[in-house]
Amino acid sequence: MKNEYLESVLKQFLYYKMLGDRTFDQLTEEQLFMQHNPDSNSIATIVKHMAGNMLSRWTDFLTTDGEKPWRHRDAEFENDLGSKQEMLKLWEQGWIVLLDSLESLSDEDLSKIVYIRNERHTVMEAINRQLAHYPYHVGQIVFIGKMLASNWQSLSIPKGNSAAFNAGKFAQERHRGHFTDEVLNPKGSTED
Image (cartoon, rainbow, N blue to C red; front, side, top):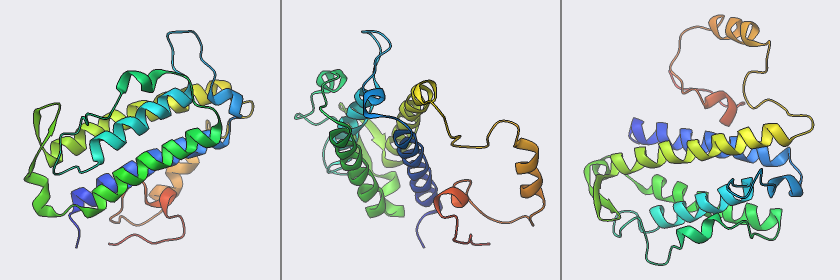
């Protein structure tokens, strides 16, 4: 059985990826590249930064520093991607490297030491660092998307539906589950 911590973080990363995916689906190509002002980032720029970070941090995760010499972080903040397709390709590349790396980890790996800019982290600390970083940026993506979309479809419990949602939850027997189970695997079942 895979470590519960690793299963949990994998589900959480997948959940935040899904929030980004569902935001992109609601926006036009033009909206993905809009900047509120010259000092703000477009959604495409945030995606470019996240992909650069993911590729750097998770490539050869256990054996090389997480800040790769080939990474050009400053260039990640240039709003110069050419299309939605190019943006989505970067998004997927970053997530594939991250998810593959997480899938390859074992219980024994969690206490191993990795470095990010020569700063020592346990594997668990490095994962937690990124689990704070990526949702921060996905939150920005969702916030911008919500402001730009002409007919925003809620990514969580829609306004005014909290009581009904909670009633459905409390009508169920207590069980073991992860908060992402219903949205990531709506047809699947959870283990008790």
